[in-house]
Length: 132
Image (cartoon, rainbow, N blue to C red; front, side):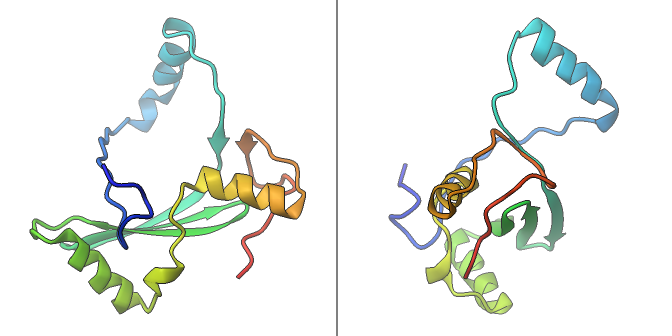
């Protein structure tokens, strides 16, 4: 699988599931008490999703900045072209895309701005800022 910096468009395989919000407590019980897993990291965010027959655009507001993701949802055989089309439609410069994870971005911002790094990132905590 190519890395996130080999091509203009990131290609990743995603497996998604939907959890009914009413079952959240049950899920947490299973994770904590049956599987015996511990919470290591978390990110508080506000997500707004826009969708049409070609793409899903997610705008995530994190405590340290805003991320925008354009994901191909069409049956088109050339998903990269669909993403590029929507990058252009929105008026973005694909060369300014951040190529790594937002966990990497947060860690880098903390280091560069000398801000304490939290494992559980939340609004209200001292945070670095994405500065353009």
